[in-house]
Length: 484
Image (cartoon, rainbow, N blue to C red; front, side, top):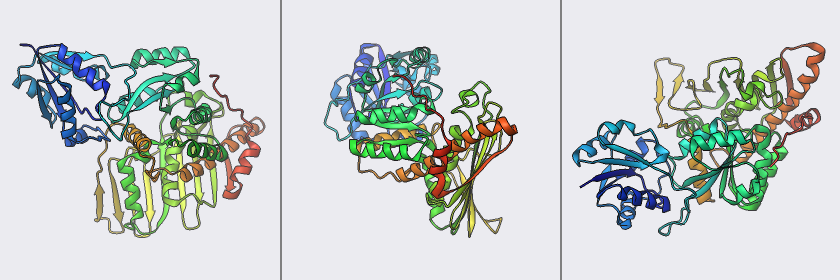
């Protein structure tokens, strides 16, 4: 008798699960199905699991394909089970190609092709639906999004869109996901939601057209270049009853949320200063180093650095000062943005050609919080006081590269529209858009000055009340909207 074994969470049981079990059963005479416990799912980074383990076991049993159902609850159990049950073949979906090759030392390993365009129709009634999702843009982050989405229940990535055919074809070869290259409207007809990871200048147009068609939107930062456009998109989302989220992934990570809550709890007293830095030495051929209009440090990483300042000190800053070091082609290699509040100060730093310590410091009247680099992947932070011997340490759970928490939040909001946007509010996104608008205005200004005075530090001090007017008067860059 030929024994086959497979494992899974089998949450929100759907047609894809059914077909996988059906094909697994066809590989042999006896099928063993391992269903993961909630605790093991959490340990291995699976988030947003909806159904209880008893519900998930019952759904597998009802298919009639499983001859035996076991529980998976610890790392290394697959090898134990294969040897214990005398398994001939281990099988799992092709989303995990290569991951379980180590099991070839114990049995045959088969990766079953994923079910294309899985129907969101459930085999049972459920208040949660599977969100059919499309990816717009197929650059560096798109494959990471696909990989991280595997750890989130309730989402199925069915297609992608990119008018650049070569990039689209490469993405399809790598991820096995169909990619549209021409008709954006036809692409939107296929999905419930989109993740926008296209070039910065296309975000607003893609997001607006998706919302107009009633499609939920998760958009990479910056979502827009102006306050007006940001307000417009949120208003459109409310009218269409759609979820609109800006993809600053640190905002949705449990460690960062814990840090924010500890800071606001009063443990360090009144918050008086917040300093955050995000810098990387970028490849000289990368888009952020070569795109004269929309590359550079601030547009690439500034959203991360702005996040803790706005979250902790608020949206009502009195004025800001922007200082940038431009490269020869006009992009900013390094940018500092200083905030002045009524009772506090903030500093956000971003770099693509200058490297600095990527830490977050929240200073209070009783002590301070230190999250060392990389603070945006918040795995640990400390509270320090006047007495240097007193240090409180926190080590929150963190899995993957953070994207799965952002995806989980997006899916949860789609399935439960009443959830509050407290992790990153529309008001906070709008405030960051005001800063982006001021930066873009200054950027246009230093392009005009560089021809007369040569390269140097570009600076601008702007009162909060004048950010929009100053930026609008100076910014004449034309957004290059993709032809779709």
